[in-house]
Figure 1 (tube, rainbow, N blue to C red):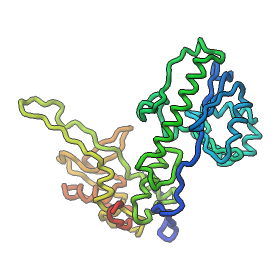
Figure 2 (figure 1 turned 90 degrees about the horizontal axis):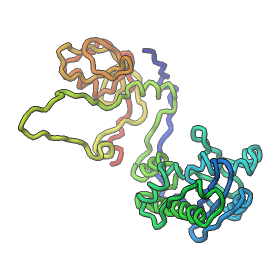
Figure 3 (figure 1 turned 135 degrees about the horizontal axis):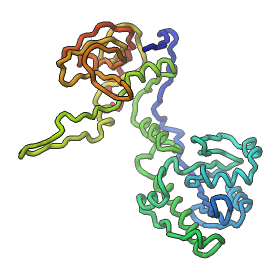
Figure 4 (figure 1 turned 135 degrees about the vertical axis):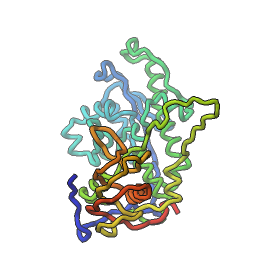
Length: 344
């Protein structure tokens, strides 16, 4: 195992900052649009809903002009990055769009977010990562998706217009209810669930949380990451007694509330403590029933006995030693500042 760890003198840190009380930005004014097509590529009908009025458009150009009649709004399309946005890209012309757009963000091979003029386009699947049918049912929207046989509606029909209207109004209501959820009060709006979760966390932390901005340091720390332990100790329960099942509820939040977490790197040395991540050689007794330390071997996650080498967190190593393991060598150890409980 080779590691490339920078010295303390070269370490620099970024921080996750608590949210400021002033200047927080909610979603603000938004509109939604949707497109119906044949064979995924032939435009049939487009629709825009702004929370008050629903309008339909028979061409991509007229749809674009309809969108451009709004100013300083966010424009959502559900899974638009793999469908609806592509029609807009073709209408704008790819070179014109790329030259005039800012904040162009890709997600895999799809367009997630971009800005043209005074419009900011966002794929709503970032905050609603499931079908519109499931989303509208989950939010108990007044408008739900309706069934339609697209093979029988390859041209504009009253049924297709109604179908499009329901889609637009259902999406608008989903986004509206999502953005008004009490948990988002006081937080900036973010276009993905992951970024929104971080923003919510920032409401509750009371001090900056440092992060590693060196790939070498980050790679080293990640060597100590492992999945949860899932093993069958007794494959059969053959008894007339009761079998009890236990699970944790909200374990991560409770740990952040009650237990100390590491901050930035404070020292680089060869000692082990509760706030260290250390690369060691260790020997685990052959008769140890449930070894604490682990290794990945042949794409498997195992807890071996005997002698082996790895990168582990200090509490893991200390528990292994308490159970009889012997540290043969400490190659290097990062010691982190003790921040105390994260949410205290």
